[in-house]
Length: 242
Image (cartoon, rainbow, N blue to C red):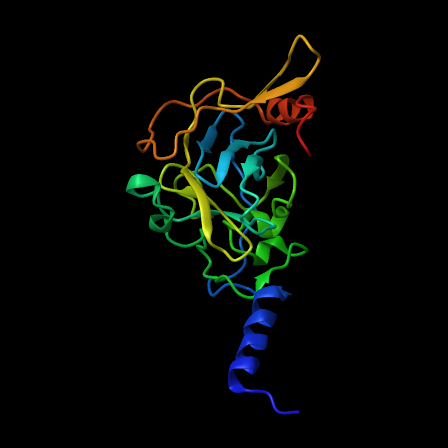
């Protein structure tokens, strides 16, 4: 059987984008971070024509190892094919909600995008590849929320794995088209957590934070929000999918 050159190339590209591998970056694997205070909070809240609401929260842990991430996405346009990867990107969102301006993934150890991240060896993945390490947003779930500790993110501005102020979050469709993005800024007191209320008819209603697609670079004070509270809020929001 004879295969055209274009067919061979297409098969090769497909294999490269679907395969996973434990690939050490040019500067080595990402080290576990420490000293991440649970009194520090960074977050983003955004919306777009394809994502009704996106919200992520980053705070330290009780022992300072890694960063507790809370990620919620609501109302992803069904016309966008999934599942939906999301990442920390190098730069802030551009004017007019320009997600392209965010550049590439946070990748201080020069691991590069391909082959895809192996979640069994997260230290070999790009630091900013959150969904590669912890799972993509699934198709068909209107309200999706998850929480996890990522041992390779940092809340220390002197660490190359720092996620705050000059970084952003981008969510993509399965073809890696950018469908929503928002800047990561230092949180105000109390944060921007989704809240859950019950209507007189007994229905649970989740209210998401006011979108701030392209806020100015923040330099505000830290909030005293503990990691255990972050996870507790998510567990309390019963209408969300964990």
